[in-house]
Image 1 (cartoon, rainbow, N blue to C red):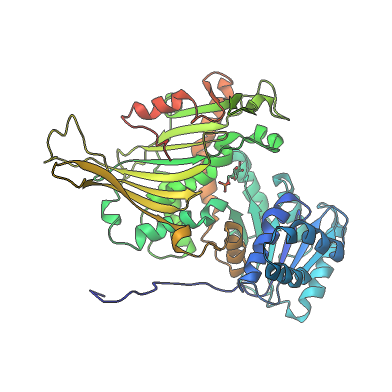
Image 2: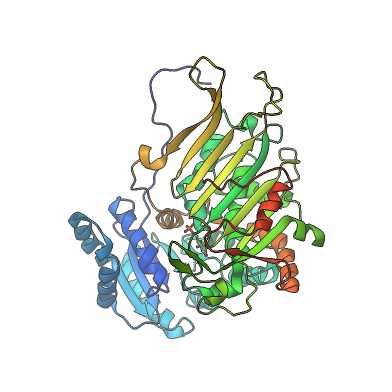
Length: 513
Ligand code: BG6
């Protein structure tokens, strides 16, 4: 084992270049393609991570050909690039773009797609990885996958290898039953290791860093348990409202939109046991094990442990913010929640008795996401009267966004003749230390899907367990309707009941984030 050594090493570093791939984007005329997918693929190209042979085929109902698709991407994406050098590179990149138009349920579309792929892959057919990105409404997943199957487009050319992959975005169902049904439909065509379910939070730098911080350092893991940790708070707060997504949001609500996926994923990374290696299945096994240890809630517990809220009108600094019920496309009597706070416990040796407080909401005071690990108070203070002036506990904060980084607060002596204690914090911000041009979340996920690395994608058993936990909560809220729905002013930190939830346990939300 390595002992003391001198000098600074660069540490472990692994960045792989994607193999030659054909990336097919269904829903290519939509918003996600121009906002995220094409810019991210271009980002990979710019950073030398995209194989030269790679081709990108857009597919959607809108009538376009290769040229008009390239022109559209030029208008939508090229203009957002800052330097002339990037614009010139983008011109080269657009030669990789192709297009097939047609309805998602029509055989003809898949026939055209098949010929296009054949023509582009030419004699490289067996060597090419194929990634189909379903950037369409979720109700089209089944149709597209069935048609891909019928057209032989996901058949594996080399038995035993998995080079035909399908990426799907959440929502993966809207409760236990629908998620299981979706899985059955996907499995009737694809094997589980061909299915790449995206949770873009898993690809955020700081979320990925949770595993590095915990398992690549000796100093944290010995303290990472109920002996030293008092409570853990996970907050994902957004200042925006539902924007133009009311149609989707009315069917979804915050618990489905943020908790069933992003919040639980972060909880798992913070609380899971060390996996035996950094491979996809070891990590995914530990996440599911953790989900299985979350204590489920009885009917009474649901009322005690969850607060759901909805934002109302407010006027701040002269700016008016609509109430959720007044947003375009929202029912005037809607009981859809735009805020959830929850308290949960993990019943295993490591976490017995440690409360986890999770909250997320739209139209909150500011956009900020963090995981705060508050350590216990010291057992005995030698510094005067600890009852009247308790020392602040140490808090380790993982800032997920917008100021990605890590900070640790601790007590220190203030300079001077008196014995005065001050609370300091040791901070590190990604932007101060590393190159700002990190591969963005979608770029990371697209690269991994081409590489066949499923670590950052969600496995079916995770989804099914997450729904199993939360479906009873959703059912109870559905029965309760407006009863127990708490309203909060836009721009606040959520309903007062959310404060009471944590105050009853002697805690306080960290609103100074
Ligand atoms: C999406 C939700 O998954 O995540 C949105 O559907 C939410 O409602 C978004 O706004 C938040 O993502 P981010 O990366 O902006 O924190």
